[in-house]
Length: 493
Image (cartoon, rainbow, N blue to C red; front, top):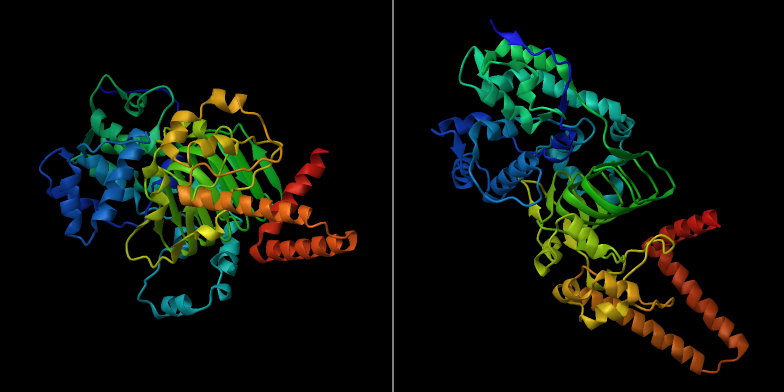
């Protein structure tokens, strides 16, 4: 007689799968039925996908991110994978976040209304400020979790059929393939229900699974911040920043995954991300991040300063996206890269230059011109930096910096409180442009000091410089960041 495990511990849904590994791919999992083996290679998958108008780039993304989700490791080696589990991953792509993909991605690019909207000036349409989008933004994290739970529950029976060829039963090995999306802290998921048997009825297993599923809250969430400055150096493994407006957020640590969604007019710095950064449904944000992978969807008027292992992935309704080198400099920058297992080399430094565009998305993106490049401003009271002499000694070369700039050198470097602060992870020509600007400014300062102007003329010159500088701050939007930092300093005093 078959006995069921009485253990009442629940099956947890891997929420990060639904936060980071859902793409606008709609490939029918049944296409893999033609494989007469339990395993499939990338080359086999690519060849099959081509028959269904899937590009090589899209096939590479699907296979790579399936391996990432499965192994939870930032570096993956191409190897054969379980056909049924890959089919399950393809089935997951039918999930749509309400308020995210459903608003922005269910678009037919041949639709006349869509084409008309694309021709409109940028300031005449803002998806995040549309009435429907505003309504969607009030969703709580609980609503998001319920949506994930409902999706999983409604698909469990279909997934069981996908994972086994038997009409009536499912084995422990087949059930464990669901570990792609389900987990238990103490046991393999099959141990929670299979007891002294390798096989159970599909109906029994599916009903038990539906009954025992739960979705835990995110490890760390920054939600709904408005007109605030936030500095954190100890957050959970998986960080979610959502529904923030007019705020500056600084995260000085390494996290496992990073989600930024539905944010407007924000500046966000995160030390490093071990796995993946997902940016979706954002407007007028500036992000500086080092992450092994990054994907950007349904966002507008935003600048992303990126350093990472894999080219940025863009899809959905993205417009006026500016991709730029990572422009940070903290005394722990190189340490953070090592913590996140992000290689320190020129290839990772330059990945921002060649984004991957998924599907038929019409993406309006550009690279940041060198003249517009500057260091990401961080609160000096909370962030130290690597002084410029160490960077100059290495001639802006990242390979030399990785070798020469050690923690000992940073600690023994004499601090210069009128120091030049140079970005660390940008191409040499970008760093040199910042350095040349500092030099030009110093030269102008010296000329003014040596000019022996009368006090009255000095005041006139000072007022002219300050007036033009303020006008530049306002026109570029830089004044907000400085004002917020001043408020932070005032609060600390």
